Length: 323
Image (cartoon, rainbow, N blue to C red):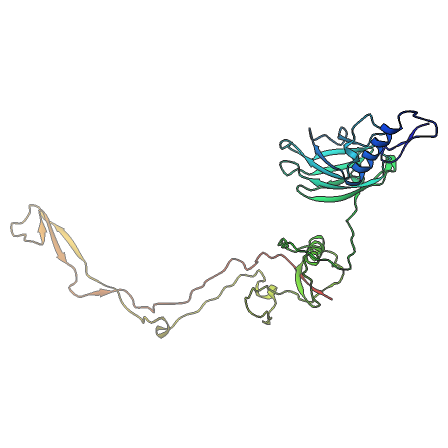
């Protein structure tokens, strides 16, 4: 009885397939070739879904072409499909590995799984990323995982220029930055310090005791200083006060503001002798020929400059140090 291997290779039993050995054997060799070094350009026709995914088969025998037999899978699409693309590798008992390239248009993610979709047993490859994946072939509980998720290197030589990472703020980002630094030939030295925010400190790092301090950016040699805690200076209280300046302090002593005023007298009938000081029935009369003045006062008496609040917004960070 004819049977098939994990890769769908035909196994001919003794006395079977008389006269067909040449064709079957040559097809089997083609399958070997594809499985060892085949490159399949997989053009996704649609996004698919968790319940109705695109199919990537490994078929038995010669009847059906099997994109899933290729060692390298280059996923592309004719246009932006608008969402994450789903592929299911069949059958669910296939066990093997692939080199996968996600070159989907529109920078879409690619999710690959076996048997019924389960988020915990599926693998999502981000846009424009490559991965080495493994199918464990256990049927309804099969996993698709990344082969290179946990790697150990005795040495690593990277010839391309490293990509500059983003800010280092949490444990995942720190671990990613540390891994990226190691892969680019850069290593953190003992006692190196970086900013960090997270519940758990990454392996090989310890928290430095820096509490209630402001962060100062300098271009020279870093140092520290000051004696008053951050929250002591910015404690949310209102600043009030009053100071009376003397004449010498203000620069202007006691002084006056002189003025002279008149009133108008109404005449009936208008007198004939009104000169330039009168118009019509009115006569302008000087009340006081001497200059009058306001009461003298210092230029500055007591006054305040209140601030409504010193409650400056803040965001706590930690400093961690390489051990």
